[in-house]
Image 1 (cartoon, rainbow, N blue to C red):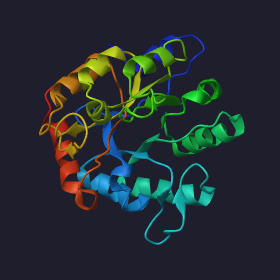
Image 2 (cartoon, helix red, strand yellow):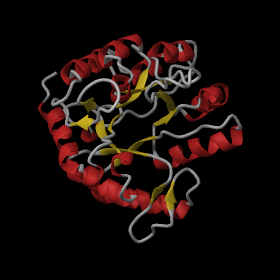
Image 3 (cartoon, rainbow, N blue to C red):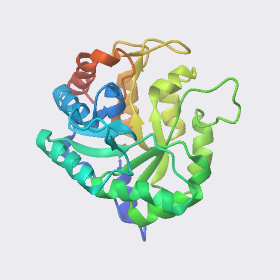
Image 4 (cartoon, rainbow, N blue to C red):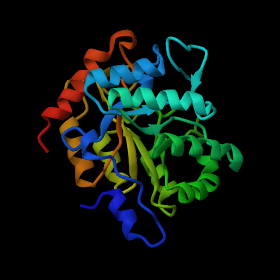
Length: 280
């Protein structure tokens, strides 16, 4: 099956984003860490821990402290060129590639929105993850200009907020179906489980429009559940991986491990090891 990158190549007027190289995939999967997993630490430490877990790609989020030496400096799309150069050097030191950024708000104001795209262009990031549905018209123009994908991320449904709709894959599909093919879903499998939805069902609804993922296994469905290493929880991880592969999903997929915050590295490593052992 064609990957999204190949599909884009076949469409007139569209340039395909550079695919994540095989050297930065694990068992064919562009799996890495969402730096939010290590939000008790700095961005530099998140890079180090991502490498220690055995991953080769990372997703940054806005506002993380830069490093132990510069805790007052934040890594986001407003960071200075000097700061970004330091981050690039740290990534290169550990053989890590920055591939995604989010979850970040995108403004309806084009100049503000452009700051995020410029940051991603500078860092070589290929996917922005957001929940800013109101800015779709603004950022669709920039998606075409920069050849950077945007994925709508889902948090759990909110019982007291009917206006929060991105938890529902059918809503996301309706939102993106007539838009540029580089606009799709950031499939957060764990938050679907918190919404009592089966991840594989959601992936099938969004077939062909998944541009990134926060890939999670949880110890159950509904409220009060938490992340566990892949293959030890209630998500059918082999079925999830098989469905993504069948769809030609080319990544990135981020481990966003929101449990055992101070000492999650062994569990994150277990997730990477699961991908290594997975037999497609």
